[in-house]
Length: 170
Ligand SMILES: CC(C)(COP(=O)(O)OP(=O)(O)OC[C@H]1O[C@@H](n2cnc3c(N)ncnc32)[C@H](O)[C@@H]1OP(=O)(O)O)[C@@H](O)C(=O)NCCC(=O)NCCS
Image 1 (tube, rainbow, N blue to C red):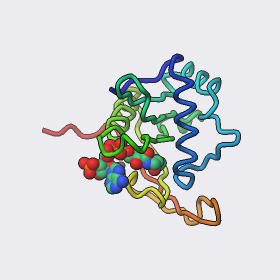
Image 2 (cartoon, protein in one colour):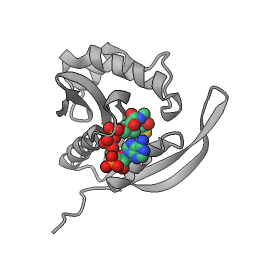
Image 3 (cartoon, protein in one colour):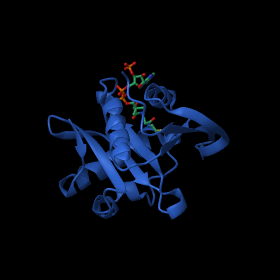
Image 4 (cartoon, rainbow, N blue to C red):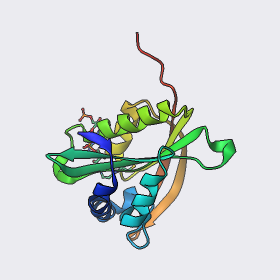
């Protein structure tokens, strides 16, 4: 089941985000130290900032197993754009379609808000995530070499964009 997280979910969301940063450090720019997504109060503040800030959760038998956030840009000249962040599904629940459903929820939300461009960056350390985004129609618009460094490794990042609304299939 996919739905926006609520105040009742903030502790579970913070725990899942901490897991994400430990599980896939080169997939995310954030580090565990000082990460807002790992802080229940900061997550609550984001929930209060809806609809410009939305976090969707994937729930399996009531347990939070996946997350994605979509944030509208704050500058007036960029308010036609939103960014997808922090896509994560816990390892035991992967390849069951949760990420695809989370992404679809984020896209539908952005479409409903009149967003023209959905953007994201995907690390070369996350080729599965890149395929997920390509399958949803995102196109690569740029490559950033040496975008992330962690544990003596470097990863490039591909910037991707999806034009909204998506054409309706007839
Ligand atoms: C990337 C991630 C979110 C995918 O979650 P998931 O729930 O397993 O993805 P889904 O089951 O919805 O997969 C949808 C499609 O994405 C692609 N995909 C997902 N994981 C893949 C993998 N490991 N290898 C290849 N393709 C993959 C496939 O096209 C898949 O469709 P299919 O299963 O019909 O082939 C998950 O593996 C994860 O959390 N990884 C670590 C963190 C991360 O990389 N986050 C992305 C940051 S940008």
